[in-house]
Image (cartoon, rainbow, N blue to C red; front, side):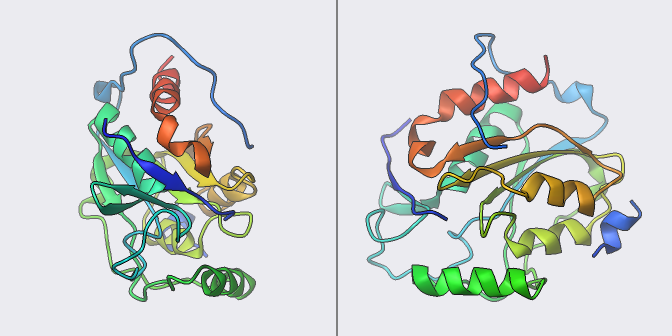
Length: 221
């Protein structure tokens, strides 16, 4: 895998009604996800600043939070985790996008994050999963925003029926891990099975592929 540069700064219920912070332990067995274990397919859905922010052309990893620069292209660190999961599981990659982009300026973004959480907002999404019912397993990725999920994740979880599906969370943070995010997922989707997730400190994402792979393997043990 090509060398990457990274820097990170700290960062109800229509569909679902019908419905820890730490690193994973290392395992040595070859990582696989046996899709035949499930009746349907695997979806790797994630939310990231990259893809939801109009960054200036000169943005680089030293001037913006949660951004990786690879081959002169911006990649969100949550997207990096999603790419590893897709590579290992063969799942379908899906970016959760909002109609209104988020600000590129970090301080402005922080204020908006806090305002959305205080107002219990539901940002309108511009991307939607086709044939959602075909998926049995959903890897769900996001950065930690204000000690929980970004509010677009609320919009996403409320849009679909997660009854009898398995949700596997993964996230990046500046040190707060999942905070309240896993409990938020369980509250929004009480009829889903929520497995133990993986959280990676943002400044470790570029070196975390082996950890992510080991975590995926451990899910099937």
